[in-house]
Image 1: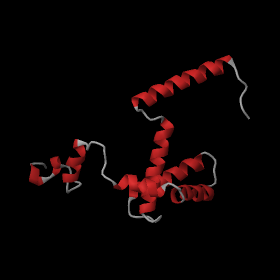
Image 2: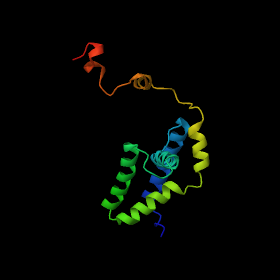
Image 3: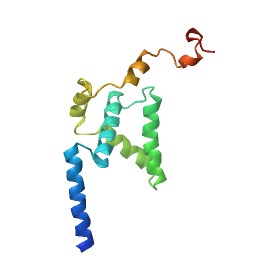
Length: 134
């Protein structure tokens, strides 16, 4: 049911319009846009794994955490699992999202990423014997 119009509500709605226009002009996504992008990224990862555990503990933990949040909010575990899997598996835009994630990124590469890529061991350099560590 729509809310009754009030002066305070109208003022707030106008402020929101101006705020959203500023965000758009700066190219800043709204929180809901980020939420949708994160959900889409998880769905693409899920599709690439064939919907099966793929040994990626972080990914599996993320999906389990989403289900736990739903259960904590009062939803049935079985229904939360069913709906979560459905949202991850049956997206009409999966082909488009997969294409976006497989083409070369336009994002600048973090200098930390190259350091991470060069790292062959989980043992920090400061603790490795070949680097003068302990």
